[in-house]
Each structure stands twice: as structure tokens, then as C-alpha cells.
Amino acid sequence: MPFDDRDRMTKFYELAFGWRTQKLGEDIGSYVLATTTETDDHGPRSPGAINGGFFPKKPGCPDQIRLSSRNRSRK
Image 1 (cartoon, one colour):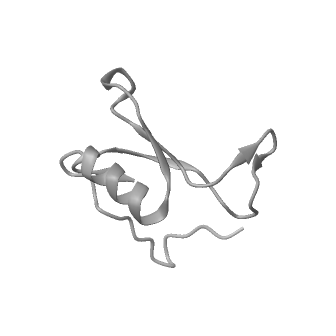
Image 2 (cartoon, one colour):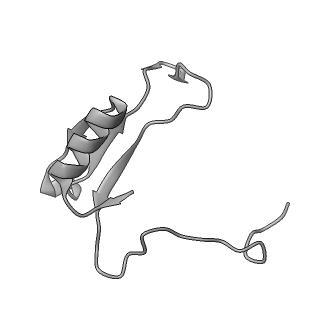
């Protein structure tokens, strides 16, 4: 997900949800890893849980993307 203020974003998610964050350097695009659940060699220990990350918001980057039912592919 995009962020405007990296320090504010990491503080919020750490305090609000207990997530662990790891701020990466500019050479990695200032990406922030977010650990939301414990993992082992097979992935998340809790079914349905995921880990993820955040990246700096760029001009023209939408806050969220919406798909209409017409745009979804059906298999």
C-alpha cells in the first residue's frame, strides 16, 4: 500500500495492530516490510493471514483501485 509519511505510517501500524515493520533503504525504493503474522518454512502459521509492505506514494498514484463487475475476468 502507498504511504505519504513513512515514520507516521510505521508508528500507526505498530501501535494500532502490533505489526512489526522494517524500513528498507532508498536503494530498495524506501519500501517498508510489514510482518503481520508469524511464519514458518511453509508460510503464515495462521490460515488466511498474510504479510506485506508499503511503498512511497507517487504523484498520480490512486489511493485505491476499484474494479467494476464488467472489468473482472471470469474463469
